[in-house]
Image 1 (cartoon, chains in turn orange, purple):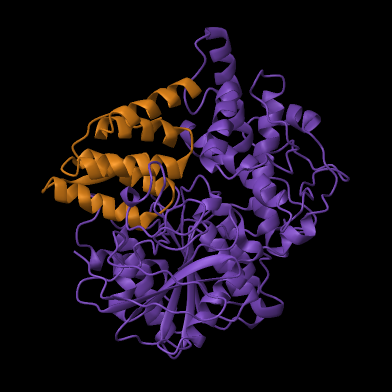
Image 2: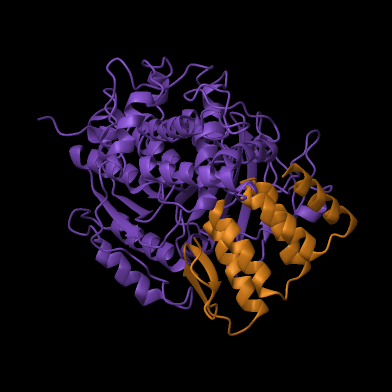
Length: 105
Length: 487
């Protein structure tokens, strides 16, 4: 696990792309390091502001923090990024209303 | 889209101010002119935003549980040691350093246009900050009273999410305020809350004893030590949990060990009745280990005095959970602890009792919103609070949102709650105008303007929370509202 973290951290350092920030942020989130995760997921969304999925992922992380206000803002940013986007909640998570994926665990 | 129109600077003795400009965390909505003030005191930091057409009400918005010691610093300063460095966003700080945001949780968008001033504090303590939070809130009021541009608010209303709900409950019961709205609040009281967390740890220890690299070394009612690097602490905790239970990262590659992890995880759910997902087990364990250690080990709080109590007399665990056979084994093997010397101090933070002191004197309405499917701040904690209010004869309306998760309220649900609350607070007869949960749900539907498809207004009308003493055995020193009925 420590190796995976170090590898993703290194990837962000060498290539601070939205994808690398998001991957590192997801692992930090799963490991409950929420402030560090939010830092990475914010960077991913801000570097890729037209990608609604980045804002949806950020919104879900803010709900875990919990900071509902910043989650609401991230939901709005998702809708700005993709006009007409409909959101819904399943299993406690915000997602695209069009998603047909199975309910999470 | 939002503009901050002015930033006030000051220089009163014992208060520190930071200059600022336009912020990435805007707090003055379109069409509203605001002044923002920043200050510090009692070891914490705060910010206050006052609209130009201030009606005299101040709403103090309290944040949730945070173990990051570096978050106790000024609004919009980089979370790094040394001289405060102002920032407006993370990219203004060195790599990996967060720009600190003392959040208003989006409530400023609703309250400032209503003419209400808003304020928020970092508190002076991390984690279970309720030992001293009332002093942190008083620093805000002291600042306002002394500042010639603001003055003392006519009414002070306290609200907060999660741990901020515990801060709200403590303010109700130990200070003089004029209104309160706990939100997904940890309002079960200090002993009841941390006895529940301690039970989670005891179950973990029972299941994970002997699992290589899957156990914690600390006494369960003292908790794990914390450091200045809370992210690293959390990762270390989650790695240990993963070794024993195979979550949150995933099971062992060894199929035999993976099967053992799955069995232990299933038993964990059965004994604790934990209602969260696999990925949330580690968050609960974080509270039970690091959250516990943060205040028990702190020299300024419990100074290492442990808080457990399940022996002398031995508590009966044979009826807990969903599997009587497993419960019987757990009852025989669980670690037993005599009454911890830290319980007295913990009980005071917060003591959920409306029959004495400032709690007895409460004469304003309280409106609470919580999740009926909250896996962290469980509905049983709200039941303790509402029962205590009922015993004390207080006016309290409890609303439930059915969305799964902790504090997963929509903007519309929250707005409906505050709009109904101010109608109630402003009325001449609080008894006659007490809103029902149906009234608040209707207000939400009437204000619905988009939000989340299908569940913008997700009030769980008629929901009734279970009793905490049916989930874990009651301790003799719990408040009356948490005790089982006497035969």
